[in-house]
Length: 225
Image (cartoon, rainbow, N blue to C red; front, side):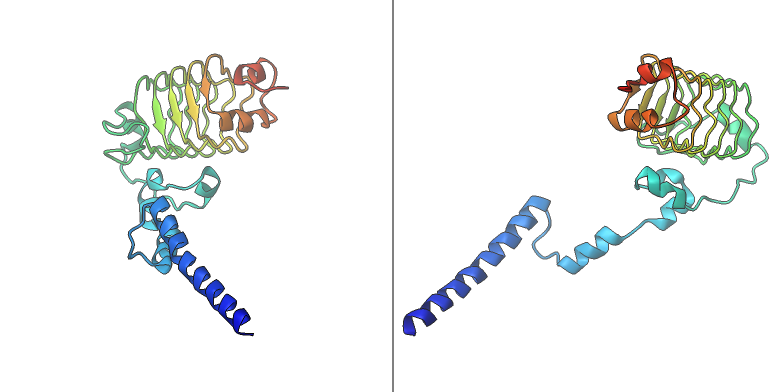
C-alpha cells in the first residue's frame, strides 16, 4: 500500500510540474508577455473595430465574406464628390489608406478618364464606370458592390481586396492586372479578358466556379476544366 501511495504522489507532482512548461512554451511561441492572462487574450481576439469600419471600408480587417456586414458611412453630401474620381487619392497603395474619403456611390462616371488614379478604399457601390479608362488604377479595398464596370479598361491595374459582389464586369479588360483577394460572388464576368493577369490562387478558384466565366477566359484565368 505504501508503494502504491508513493507512486501516485510522484505521478501527480510530475504532471503539475509539466503544466507550467507547456504554458510557457505557448507564450513563447505566440510572443505574448508573461503577465498576459488567458481572459485578456480572449477579449483581444474577440474585439472588433466597429468605429473604423463605419468610417472607412479600408479599415476593416476581416475576410471578404464578412464585409457584407460592414456598416458604411452616410452618403457624402459634397455636390462635387463624384468629381473626386478625377483626382483620386494622394495616399494609399496596397494598404488601402487614403487621405480623403472617396464616395462614388451612385455616381455616373461612364466613360470617365481615370488612367493611373489611386482609388484606395473608394466607395463605388451602385456607380456607373462603364467604358471608363481605368488603366493602371490602384483599387485597394474598394467597395464596388453592385457597381457597373461593363466595358471598362482595367489593364495593368492593381485590384487588391476589392468587393466586386454582384458587380457588372462584362467585357472588362483585365489584361496584365494584379488581382488578389477579390469578392467575385454574383459578379458577371461574361466576355471579360484576363490575358496575362497575375491572379492569386484563391481568386483563380473563385473565378473558375463563377458560371459567367466561359470560353477563352477560363484558360486565361487558369481553370483546369
